Image (cartoon, rainbow, N blue to C red):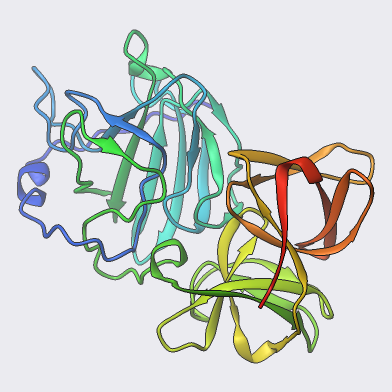
Length: 310
């Protein structure tokens, strides 16, 4: 279904540029790339409004990831002379992020996702046709565009904290964990909720079945929540519902990205470089791992290193 968006014309861009530049970790940049020459927030557009987001240029098909966990409120086609294809994610406290011009969409409306979930791929849809491929990334609060820092030609690193305070949002997992040794934990007391941040107010992104293993790689400042790698993304589990385990074999992903497979070898998910998973069993060519959401999955031995938790 085509949905036409009204573009807000205001002086908000100029006012927002006076905002503070501190990386407080409420949002992260959604992809690698560089800011287009006229793609920075507040860039003047001849005969039109100032630019209301950040255009991050990269090769056609480059993955685009969620800047924060939340609920997908729209995923589809919009004005063919505007955003083209668009994903919107609601993060609470009035905030939403928009991802426009994408070639493909990998999430659906109503889906709850974690920070770092791939939402689509860079494209040239809408009014991006004829330009270099890029994702138009916006942060809005109650519909009003908010400053997204980035200068013309600036290099952007996917997952790095956006240097801007977004009042009303708490720091998210990918920016807020204190690193520590790998430790193995056993879930207990029924299903354990996995959340997008270290708080019971953070959105639930999944669950771990009782008597399953997870690997923590850090904690929050108070030490009562554990940061874990959950289905390819960082997430949080309350320490009180886990029991520490002695050293347990783990695998760490050593390639840029590889596929989880089911027993038949069909892809069921993506594991990204340097993420860690507990080993449940093995075959001559692959490891069976605890993957969350009550399931096991497999990783090819050639794509991981074998180690142990402390």
